Image (cartoon, rainbow, N blue to C red; front, side, top):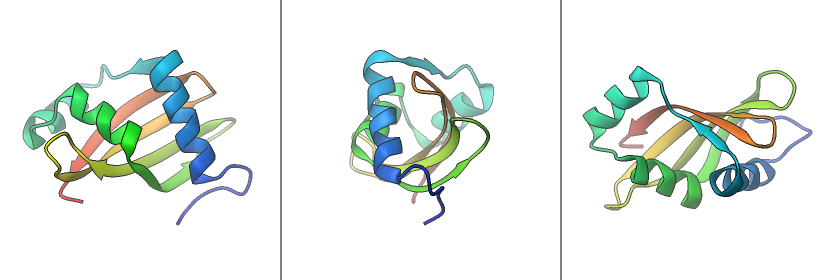
Length: 101
């Protein structure tokens, strides 16, 4: 697994869970909505994967900024992934979704 020595995938996933509950989530990217449409995903599917999935790949992109791939199942049980950028402790940008993972 790719990663960074000063944070684990589990720590980063906990940060994502905290952001889902208390933070700011940005998802105004037209590319994201096009990919969601292609894969039949709703925002609820994206949140479900982020909440219940596992980070299988992440890399640091500056101070407290991480690009993450969270893999899991959507609400119908199909495998997929959500690519996010976790920014600081309270912000996250949802970049795209991947299907058939």
